[in-house]
Length: 92
Image (cartoon, rainbow, N blue to C red; front, side):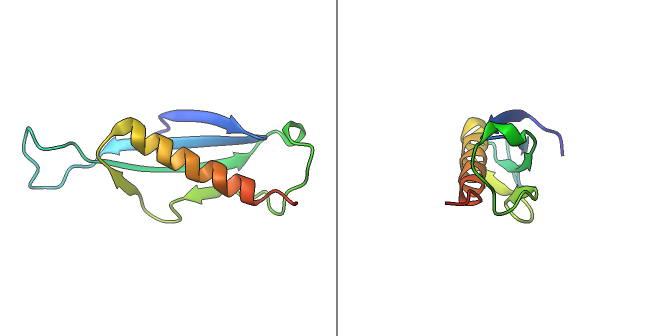
């Protein structure tokens, strides 16, 4: 996986990757299709004062990649889902 964007969230590092993934019958002028995926890794324990139910690497999607037709939308959607997944690990 070639990382193309990185950010942090409550002590977790979030990485997203996006690449062109046009179908075989794609022609110039057709919309460009992108395949995207990402993961979050627990990296900085002192960035959040609470506790975690789990600190294992979080992947989205769990297998494979999701397809989008806009590069930034792909990153934003994957990052948003990973932030949500990290937030779900916070012990209330």
